[in-house]
Amino acid sequence: MIPALAIILVFQLIGEVATRSLGLLLPGPVLGLLLLVLSCSLRPALAEMLRPVVTGILGHLSLFFVPAGVGVVAHLGQFRSDGLAVALALTVSTALAIAAGALVFRAVVKRMGGPEE
Amino acid sequence: MTDAALIWSYLTQGPLLWLTATLIAYWLGDTFFRAMGRQSWANPVLCAVILLACVLGLTGTSYQTYFEGAQFVHFMLGPATVALGMPLYDNLRRVRKALLPLVAALLAGSVTAVVSALAIGRAFGLSEVMLASLAPKSTTAPVAIGIAEGLGGEPTITAVLVLVTGIFGAIIATPLLNALGIRDWRARGFSLGVAAHGIGTARAFQVNETAGAFAGIGMGLNAVLTSIIAPLALHLFR
Image (cartoon, rainbow over all chains, first blue to last red):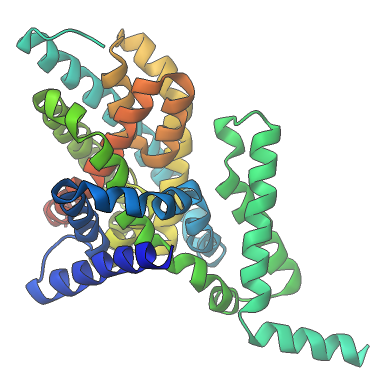
């Protein structure tokens, strides 16, 4: 468990150092994510070694953003004045994004003449 | 009575109390979620957040004090983002097979999510901080928080917007996609993962295994793409 956790933290560390020193737009952990995919592709044994810890972390993914979510307490005032605009932006854009993604996916599959699954 | 006050002041100085409270609140929220048959509206994070907000309010505890303890949980967002690479790696073969539709749908969904939210927000005169917090709302929480921090948004606002986006997306996806006549499970899952991240992915897995796998891919790819699109789009709306 400890070696796997250490490797995951090293990916994040490399990601943070690289994005900061190169001034990249990506957040460090996202670069770490890409490093993990790349490393596992090059060494499939690594994926099996990391899997138990990764499964554990991802199984509790939602827990990790409880602290930030509680921060809404500190921002209730802002939501009170902007509430309607934010709600409208959020709901309309989420519905549009789902529709756009699905319609484009179907259109491209059709154009390529591929089967639906 | 003095003893109780002494113990309380001891507890409020260390991280133990609020770390424990965070885990218990999530545990209760998760139990409630399971008891409600995993309905999207009974989201365990939403339940835990409401519970903790009430406890903080009743005990007169500031968010800063709470975060002293909760920061250990918050820290795990980074490693969790790295861990999201694993489902992406597991599905690389399926991604290669449907590469063109995936890339096109990813671009369409991701750009629509960011640009339409910013356009509506701008039209209603939201502040720059609010727009920066809103831009990454379709991305998975750890990444969205990272993006918002980088753009000068308020991470805590982003966390809440991400949560609400996920729950809303999970609720409307089935009726919306049925109305559009989309039957391909890959398209249905992928678009939901792109627009409504992990909560949408969990919902997709409930409906169909293929939809769930593709939702996971959508969530992972959009985490990368939004990191690039959000700063550019925000620049346009400034």
